[in-house]
Image (cartoon, rainbow, N blue to C red; front, top):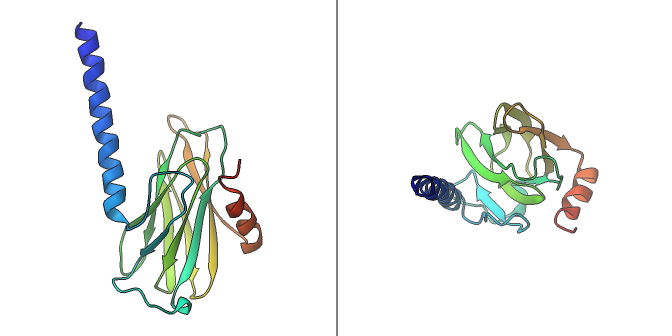
Length: 164
């Protein structure tokens, strides 16, 4: 009986933590959904979005579906001069999303599980950048791997996410 109550308590606690993380993601961005295959555009990094498409760059973030590490997801964050640390999305197995970048200049995109991995990016308006997220074997949890991919290969990879 005590074991059953303990297990139920642990389950409820884990469920509360997971729901709190989902709520945090929903509050952080306007259109990010937790559903892995749904593609949304997150208008971040500016208080007022310009109407002209030449005033932003696009960052396509994707994580191909793999069996190894398929249950592990991690947050993708960005550091730039204006917004010191912004959550831009979550990389789960076989998922993708797009971020509009309304500020030119150097930014740092990073992910953190056991270790922190970063990618530096020099944003220029009108450009498209492709960030491939992967998971590699770690000691306790998988470690993120982030790679900037050429636009040609990135578009092919990005378009194939969720088509299995």
